[in-house]
Amino acid sequence: MLSRYLRTRERSQSLFNLVTDDAYYSQPIALRHPIVFYEGHLPGFSFNTLVKKALGGGSIDPRLETLFARGIDPAEHNDHLGASASAQEHRALWPDRDTVRQFAAAADRSVVEALSRASLDGPGDRPDDSPVGRAEAVFTILEHEAMHQETLLYMWHRLTFDQKRRPEGYSPRVDGDVPPIEWVDVPAGRATLGVDRAAIPFGWDNEFPACRADVVAFSMERHNVTNARYLEFVDAGGYQDARWWRPEDWRWIRADLVAHPLFWERHEGAWYWRGMFDLIGLPLSWPVYVSHAEAAAYARWRGGRLPAEAEYQRAAFGAPSGERQHPWGDGEPSLDHGVFDFSSWDPEPSGSHPAGASTWGIEDLTGNGWEWTSTPFGPFPGFRAMASYPEYSADFFGQDHFVMKGASPATARELLRPTFRNWFRARYRYVYASFRCVKDSR
Image (cartoon, rainbow, N blue to C red; front, side):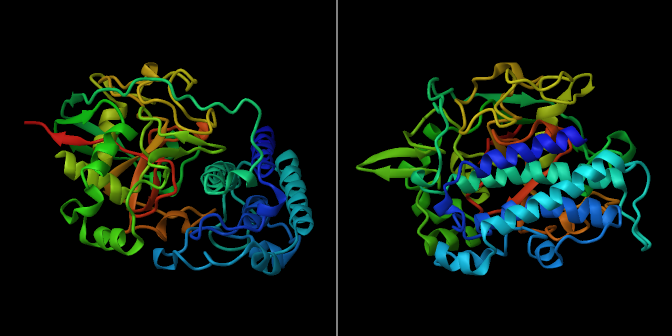
């Protein structure tokens, strides 16, 4: 666990090192905090969760521990709050970088000491009636930081190119033909949603307990919807036709003048993809990244729909003999299976990792972009909030957020388990989220 923590922290630092000094106090996404927050939040959360909550340790700096305690997307109606604030204005509100780094270093020293010396078995040392288990706290801080690393990267995607240090060898893979639209029949069967608490070393509270769903036969696209396929929707006037949108999504389209995916840009009459470090002529074979609202509108236009969470589970992990740990089987994930674990700054052509196909022959169900489902984010029967982070899931249950499954290029391999659930609001456009259509079997 100590080794894993150090590796995780090293990766975070490498991501912060990509950002130029003049961007440190900028806020590339209005729905997120400025960059300065996250350099303090990641070690601060780890310190608060493990050292203070689980082990009953003392404070380093109570003010900074509170300031950097929690980082979530504010409510959607606050989308433009802070958008006009300059880096100079944020600089006046937040600590200077030396102070942030000193706090981070002190938090790291405390966490490293705890991981080196403290027994991580058994309950924590809090004096209240609901102690935070030590092992749960350790897994919580490790996966929390891994998830935030993806957050950082899609924030970095919104920075201007001169605000990032381009790494040597950056060369997005843009080869590959656009795969044809193919439909794969998935037979009826049972899908396991969630997992028994004793079955895995750690899971987030929304992954428990295990429950099962009967899934009727359906058909699913073999490949994610590509930029080429989505361009057909754009060219057909999909963003100007209310028929394809839910009323609340149509109001958003009209109010915010949304006319194409956020990752696309139009320059001198041509479409480009906003890559991490460069503009790229729109790679037609890449999966399109869009919000849930845009994905659902396309699916209606195409005569299909988004899959339910149980349908994704059946398509990804189902097999005639039962269920598997990964779409390709029970073998450990490798770069042959998909685009994940920070293996690429951008997507790669759809269908370029056939070794990762599911037993039904459906490709890229893990990697190259999260997969939107039609299922609102909610608890499984018997849900119980986790002691180490009780607000992690419960604050977001309801009809505003939708479940995403799979993984993106920036998803850590430790999160590639069949029960892991991601979620975002329907009109959140920044995340690396792809989709595919399904149809009812005739």
